[in-house]
Image 1 (cartoon, one colour):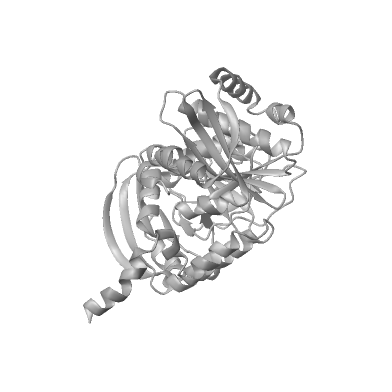
Image 2 (image 1 turned 135 degrees about the vertical axis):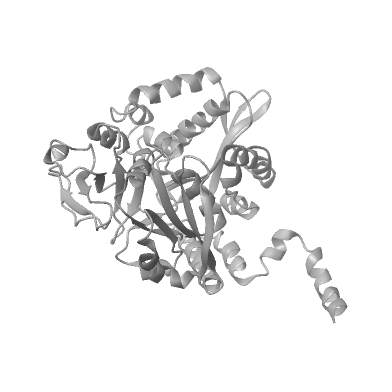
Length: 431
C-alpha cells in the first residue's frame, strides 16, 4: 500500500515547488488574485487568509506558560502568563523581562477556549497575554487587545522637501539622514524581471532579516515577491559594485505599500537602509500616490523600527493583522516597570488605538511627550499615586491623557485628565 502511494506521489514531487503550491485550492486562488487590479487583490488575499485561519482553528493549541523574574525597565518582581505560539512567546519573554525568567507550563489550551480562560486564570499574576487569532478574537469583544503588528503610513500631501521639513519633531534628524544619504552616493534604479526580484530576495532581503531580527525574523516566502512583481516596483540602490540595498513596493489603490526592505551586510548598511526610506518616499511623491504604507512594527512605542518610521512623520494605522493578544494586568510595580520601558499600543472596541504607558522613575510629562504618536486616541498613564498633583498639567501632542491608578489588586480606576480641545472624549480604557 505504501509503495503504491509513493508511486502515485512521485510525479507530484517532481513538479517545481511553486507549481506544487498552486495545486492547493486556497493557494491557487491567491495566485490568480495576484493578477487582479490593485483595488481588488488585497481583499481577495485577506479572504483566502481568513479561510486558512478557519481551517486551522480547531487544531490550534497554545501552551500556557507561567513566567517569574525581574521586570524589564526596573527589575521589580513580575509574574506573567503567556498563552501563544512559540515565536510570539520568545518575543514577549524578551520584552517583559530583564533577564531570562523562570518558566513552567501550566496547561495546553485550544484556541477557542482562550477568551473564556483569559479572565479566569489571569487574576493570580501581574500580567497575562492570551493569543486570540481571528476568528477567536471575535469572542474577545470588550477586552483590551494588543495587535501583533501595527501598520504605519505616511501622507503624501506635499513635495519631497516639505515632507523632509515636516513637523518640528524629528526635523533635524531627517535632515541629517538626507545629508548622510547624499554622502553615501548610492544610485537609485527601478529594476524589473523575475531574476532581479529573486536576486534581491536571496542576496539582500533574507540575509538582512535574519541578521537584523535573528530567531524573531519572519521571512516572506518566494511567492510573495512573485506576486509583488505583477503590480509593484523593485527599487535598488547601487554603487559600482552592484546593489547595496533595496525595497519592494506594491501598488494598492491610491497607496504605495512597502513590502520588504533589504541591505547588504556592510559598514554602511544602516545608512543604505535609511536611503531606502528616502527614495521610497521620493518614488511615492513622483508617481502621485496619496500615501505611503511604511510596513508594520511591533506594538511597542519605544520599538526602534516604529520610532524610525515615526521620525519621517508616519502615523499609526488601524491594525489589519489576524493575530491579537488579550491583555489582562494589575497595577503593580513590575507592570509599571514594563510599561515604562515598553509602552504598549492597545486596540479597543471600534478599532481605536490607545496606549498603556507608565513613568516609573521618570517625569510623566516627558514620558508622554516621548511616546505619543499620531493615530493614538488616548494615552493611559498607570501610576501608584492617587495625588491630584500627578494629573495637573499632563498633556500630549496628539492624544488625550488619562491617569489610571489602582492598589495592585483591585480593578484599576481610570481618572480623566482634561483632553486637548481637538481630541474627542472617549470612554474609559478597560484595564
